Length: 423
Image (tube, rainbow, N blue to C red; front, side, top):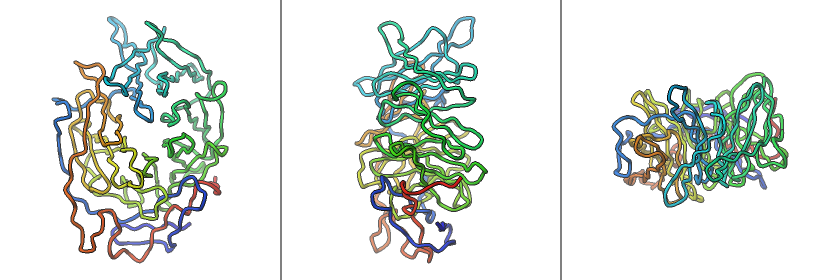
């Protein structure tokens, strides 16, 4: 497949468009496209956000939400007089009328390198490092104490949990080696941790492409070195790996976030000549777009939540982004159709980088400040003025009236089945 990159009116390549193959569980994304000319970013601070005199603090270890946002889990610190800080697991319940946190301490304090993942039944999976082994247990409240169900161990130098599976019961982990990556199911299997596959190359990331927890996107670097490309792993077909995202032959293309309902994808790539945040649609023949409004000088911008339930309307999905700069962390709200990034103050004590959208467009941000141990701030997408386009009445995300001669090659040529990935 010959890639076709378009940046500032220049083109390379000569292949034409193609459609996703019939019967594929998902299609691909168009290769790349022209940079959009966006208005200047707009700053809005709605009344729904609790006032914060200081920038929101990044909480480490990270706060993790289930795919539906019903539960969250993190390691939190309990001060111990005359001793080092003692860490323990804490589970948040967020789908009721009032959010509340349940401490899940065990007989020994946790190490800060431990990882926790909440499950849909309210239990929390914890990964601990014990010498050269990674042990896994399920924690759950039992009256005044904490119950613990050991699941087993994996003996590897390094192993990391993937984001929570949308099925709510399974948990997966990656062990990266020099030439291949082991994929493990560490919870939800028949009995203990289960080795599923040795995937060629060095894999990282982890984005779910469907609601069933079958299609997993990973960012893969070839074993011998080379550009990073996103691939799809089909857990329902024996961990079959197929190409998913390739914007240009030599570009690093990573998938950051995906919405299974609309197919909206948030992508980071250096195909435009430097690292940029862009968006595309799974299975679409339109090019990937790299909006100018998502470029903030001296700041990093990372998407963390997409509004679900927008069937066939990917451009109307509200996207929440974490913005980090010298002043701290704050919130960005954006829609592909709006071309405007709204910058808002984060609530004090925001568990930075965490949040979930409701289907009706309300963003829930978990936070814990000095006065509140467990709370959720609610944000709504600010109203946006209609963008007047040219006389032909095009929508803001449509291609230019006079596009370059080269036609972008859609990633429908890289379906999720029937392809192999070169080593």
